[in-house]
Image 1: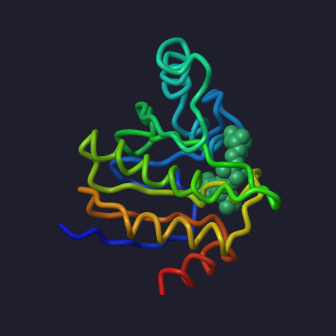
Image 2: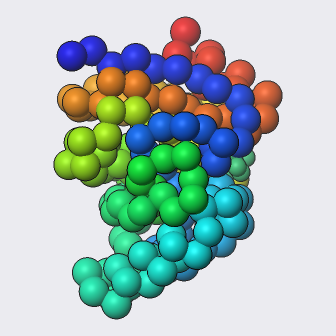
Length: 170
Ligand code: AR6
C-alpha cells in the first residue's frame, strides 16, 4: 500500500482524520501552540487521559522523540498521538530526535490501525527549529518510514511554513 503525502495550510484541530499528532512537551499536561489548541478544542478528556499516562507508564514524563496515543476527545479524530520534539540547538545536532518523533508517531498510528494522520511542523514554534531544516527532516523521515498509514497530511499554520514544506515535497 502506498502512502500519499499532502500539505494543508491551517489549523490542525479542524481536520477530520483518524489521528492528529500533537507537538507536546514531556509533561504531557499541555502548553501553548498546537498543544494548547488541541487541548482547548479537544476538551478535558484529553488532559484526563494524559494525566492517567503520567500516573502509570510515564511517571517521569514522555521522553523526547517518543510518542503515545490518547483519545481525541471532542476533536474530529479518533486519537491524538502526542510526541515531544527536541528543542533546537545550534551546538548539538538533535535531528535524530526530530526524525524519531515522526517515525514513532507512525509506529503508534500503525498499532492503532489509523489510516490518515495529520502532523504539525513539530519543534518549529516554541522549540525554535528552523523551518527549512525541520521540513527536510519531517518529509524525508515519513517518506523513508514503512507504514500502513495511507494518508499523511502536514498541516502548516502559516504561509512561511507551508512554503518550506512545499519546497521539500517538490
Ligand atoms: N495548527 C497547526 N499548526 C500550529 C497550530 C495549529 N493550531 N498552532 C501553532 N502551530 P509549537 P514546538 C504551528 O510551538 O515548537 C508547546 O507549548 C506553529 O506555527 O506548537 O514543538 C508545547 O507544550 C509551529 O510552526 O510546538 C511544548 O512546550 C508549529 O505548529 C512546546 O510548545 C509548532 O509550534 C513545543 O514546541
